[in-house]
View: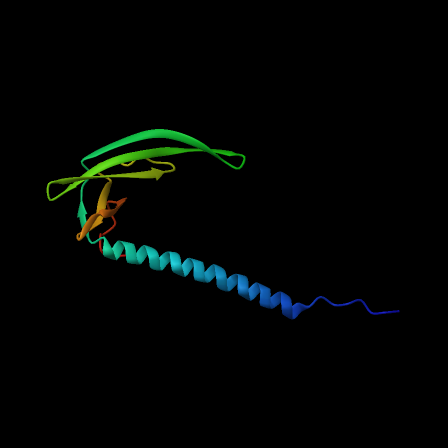
Length: 120
């Protein structure tokens, strides 16, 4: 009678370690990217116009809804446009602001009003 082959436990631990490493690196990259973008976008201004359109989409078997936003803001007398999608809430003038790169205002993003532009 031949003994049953035992699963290669060492190989399983190596695969698990690689998976955990890849997940950790992905999270680290996302955090560094957020930090870099927010640091670069150190200037801020308010929104001058916001138009929100309710929308919905399917995600697998679930139906999701949210808002597509078109907005404008001004820097040094020039108007810039942008768009943002939010799953559950609408962007409003008093609760959101635009953080932008002072050297290139076209590089911008909309953040909650409690976020400090230029500081992650």
